Amino acid sequence: MVLGGWGFLVILIASSLMNFTWATVLRRHSKVALLWASIGCNILLLVGFKYLLASTWLWGGWLNPSGVGMPIGISFWTFQAISYLVDVYREEPSDPSLIELCLYMAFWPTVLAGPICRLPNMLPQFRDAPTEAWNDIGIGLTRIIQGLFMKFVLAQALVDGLTSKGGIGAGFDKTTAWGGTDVWILGIGYGFQLFFDFAGYSHIVIGCARLLGIQVNENFNRPYLAITPSLFWTRWHMSLSFWIRDYVFLPLSGFRRSSSWPYCALVLSMIVFGVWHGAKMTFLAWGAYHGVILAAHRVGQLMKRRHEVHPSTSMGHFGSWACTYLLISLGWILFRANDMDQAGAMLWAVITPASYFHRTLPLEQYATVVVFAGAFFLFAGISERFAAWNKQYAAGERLRAFPVQVVLFAELLNTRRAWWLTPISLVILMLAILIAVKQELPSSVAPFLYGVF
Image 1 (cartoon, one colour):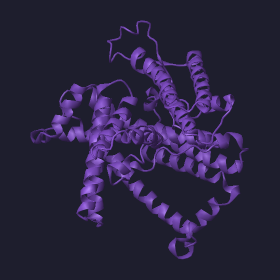
Image 2 (cartoon, helix red, strand yellow; image 1 turned 180 degrees about the horizontal axis):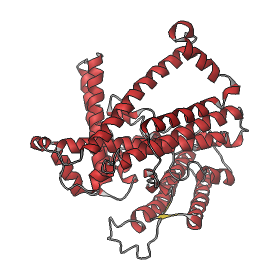
Image 3 (cartoon, helix red, strand yellow; image 1 turned 180 degrees about the vertical axis):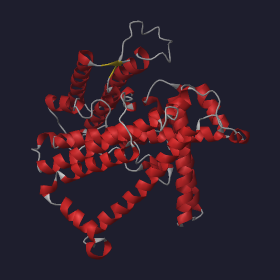
Image 4 (cartoon, helix red, strand yellow; image 1 turned 30 degrees about the horizontal axis):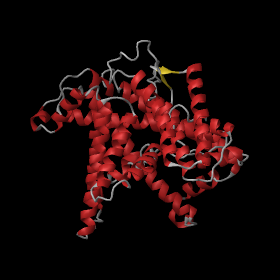
């Protein structure tokens, strides 16, 4: 249950007032004990609503007889508050007024599900008058259209499937036995569903903020093209990944000087990352799984440097990408599974050779995932090529490096009077795609997946 309306607003205002008071105290008395006390108040608020009152994981529900809900966005704006308090303790040069802090905490495009913002990035934009309004409108509309298409067409198509039996959720909720190939299909399919859903949401949020002249940091950067696990986490849910790095991993890694402690700190940080999503053992296991992968990757990098192994061939990069992508996809099984028993059964099927000789999912689910995976990586390859073209164009290498049509299109987009061209072009393109595949918008659309976190 998620709490909205006046209850949500009261809790958000109370949190803002509490953190403004703590920041004032920390400026006057910069003591680590006060910092920990201020962080503890925020964590107590988060744990109280998200893990005790709104969850049955720990106590079987006896603490929540009246059905108290979790305030929407509490995981996101609590982390924003903690980063602000830590920056104050570190004497970062940001001194917001109470109104500015409340605006930072309740900035409407990001308050529900991020991206998690940092005050040093937002405060100067709150104070400065917006410039290049028409350009911001064009960019904002473009991002909103992209996000709507990703969520309401691509992610929804994976939810529903190409046929009524082809949805990803059906594979998790209606099947009691899986073959090895079934599990891989569900892991890959859910990874794409989550990406299109959450990246689509992030596009919409970034676009809405841009309409107001505010630039919010990116949250995704082609994560499924990452060739290492560590690179993946610099591209996926970037605002939370960098928050965990700066405010959990780096402080933890400095607690001890043991050579093995940084690996333990990495695993603990990823467990925090997992449990942040909710009070479920599957989230904890998912975080620990990625912590072990990242620690193993670090050990491997250390061994390669020690033995001076520097593979740079195309096949080496492809192999590294393939291993990374498969490990990430396997992790989505833990993230999506209904409980640990189901996750264990599915992972057991993956490591059991005999399970690959039978299939329990309908072919429609296979077809759905194969179509979307093929289309995604084809588009990703094209976008990588276009990004290279754009980089060369910006460097002035346009006459010989580009087809004439690309040069003319880039020139047109770089004129200020063409702020409307890109969003309109995207609308026409996406309508053409819908007509071509005869995809009708569903009568009911699944809610944003990260709305519950």
